[in-house]
Image: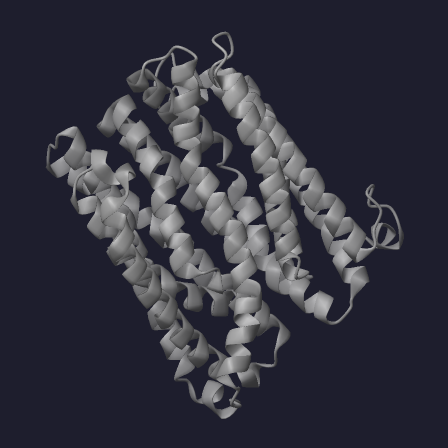
Length: 443
């Protein structure tokens, strides 16, 4: 457990710094791009993240699970096969992107060079996924923590430096903002790649190496990667659809398209930026939980799984409740960092249930992955998103509700998703829904 807590604390500190930089990044973007520009930036971001998910094929999760479960003597051989798999995935996604992206209408309202950024991102994400997966599985959380911080720090540094030196129109300023994302990913790729190959070439690593069959490795990795890619792909698709669904609902409610875009920008760029800030702790838990749960489950150590769940729920409650309390009662000064007299104040307050349950969903999903229940996670995501989207569109289209109706739909979906994840995990590891039992007494 000491290794678990040490990893979580290290990642949480780095993630806290990274999330702090993320808030500053969004403040810089809000002031540089304006309300509509920020709305356009937040609208295209899910589509870029969708490509990133496809390029990575969730290899960090499958590799970290494999490394945690197998002896170190098999790691070098497995990683060589994983790199070959990453090359294959990158090539396939690149070819598909060349054929599809020129015809995707989402990119039409952006600078033509934005499409080219996608092609640069694909190989970076594919190979970084292998490096990240190995460091996660071998519990080298220091490298993961530094890479997470480096990504945000580099993006902020580039944004401030370029925007201070030059003046751009909105379209070019938006392109610069997107270019800084790719540049920061390249720096992370360079750092993690360097650390990875230094370790791969170490004498100790080579001496303990045993050869594994490539087909066995690919089958093992893809058995986890494919269903988890399905989960992430579904989330990314729904995330990419959500801006257009929300704007369509608001237009039906009587808003102009420009006003609907601006309202979405305040929801995603302001309320989400503030509300998702504490998720650095949840994501830190996720990174450490996946290999830890996988290892304990492979050893049939149900007592450890039960104790770990209790601890994780307590940690989430410990930071989640005070966080949403602050969001609700200090919404005005927090949103005022972005825009003055903004409707995002009310958005942030109504979204309090959404954020609180989201903090619980992330570690619970890590549990499902570690337990080999990625298909269950996908089924849960489909049902909760379907119900959420129906409510968002129906209630958001009402003239007297508008964005409030959309937020009600979002709250309903996340509560349902959390409950489905929680009940499934409790059933598998043999603990009651109230977390009472032998494991609870040992915590």
